[in-house]
Image 1 (cartoon, one colour):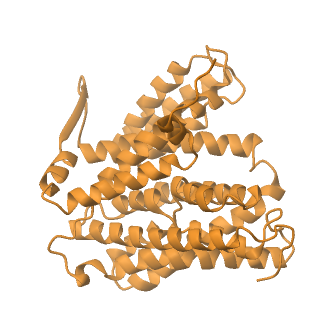
Image 2 (cartoon, helix red, strand yellow):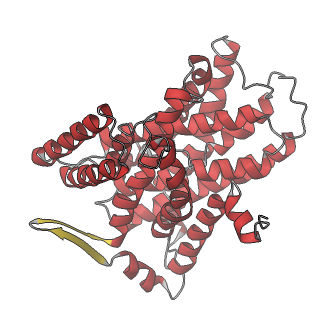
Image 3 (cartoon, rainbow, N blue to C red):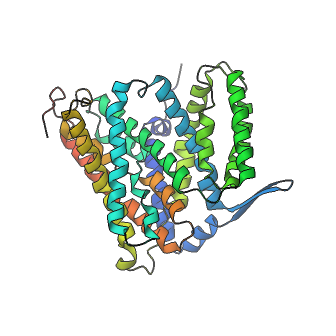
Amino acid sequence: MQENPSVIQKFFQHEAASGFILVFAAVLAMIMANSPLNNFYNGLLEIPVSVRFGAFEIAKPLILWVNDGLMAIFFFLVGLEIKREILGGNLSSPSQITLPAIAAVAGIVFPALIYVWFNADDPVAIKGWAIPSATDIAFAVGVFTIFGKSLPLSLKLFLLSVAIFDDIGAIVIIALFYSQDLSTTSLIVAVSGLVVLFALNRFKVRTQAAYILVGVVVWAAVLKSGVHATLAGFALAWFIPMTVKNEDGHPMLEHMEHQLHPWVGFFVLPIFAFANAGVSFLGASLDNIFNPITLGIAAGLFIGKQVGIFGICWLTVKSGLAKLPEHATWPQLYGVTLLCGIGFTMSLFIGSLAFEDQPLEYQVSVKVGVLLGSLLSAFIGAFILAKVGNQGNKSTPSP
């Protein structure tokens, strides 16, 4: 007879559990950064870590292993999810993707425009234009799960679809705007690795380890090439077969995705949050914190996301190009658009790329702006979802 799951097991099985752990990791980082543990926290992130294989060596501080290495695993999982959804899931039908696709584009453009409005006269600050354009899937879905229990499932699918398209946009932005001077030799090695992955896919090789081994080589080559290493994880995902079964008899892509989810949700993203959310306010003034970068990011996430997404959805539905999510009302959709302003993980990540060569004050501004905009979006979005959750789901009144 199977035993009832313990409280801990029930917690980890809950859909919002990874979001709670993400919040805990971020809060812990902020506490350490603003306490006598500040030096220990910063010293931990700067521990040098190196891997050497003959003449080939990767030597980076611990925080860059997190941002370049662990986040590549996150992007690999994102790639697997996007491939599955496009080839056979919620994004496989044009009628299903029209509204979230258009909404995601608006959710990238409007926050960027608001940020540019705040920072147009600063040639350094303007590099952060893409920071408020991202949506954090784990946080957003976590808040929806807790406060949107009575909402139609179509709204959750809409939120997930917008976040997926948002991730695609972020990946394109990173590739085009946040890559450094390129190394031809490393790029040749990376492309050669992708060709090998293509051959493994075409010949229906069932050994997962073969894909992973070649993927590690591609990641190392991309890391050395000047293109951001996380893109290697996303590229690798597209060569994982959907229908071919692995050596254990499971569909390979589905099996990898299932195996990676808990690792990413409960380890990769919390470690990233812990390493990147530690904002120290010690000795900082309001002028240092609430500058155009901070305000541009916060306003982009909280105002730009909701105005862009809700506005374009209203225009698209009224023009007849798409329909509201099934059984959803306009107030409910508005609450969901607020959740799209939770940009924690990806926004911090893009911020670390935009200002990686700048003084520490820039990263402080990024972190404060992301936290402020994300928290406002989360709290007000949760409040509205809780208020509109009991509305009748059969009518769709105009806003």
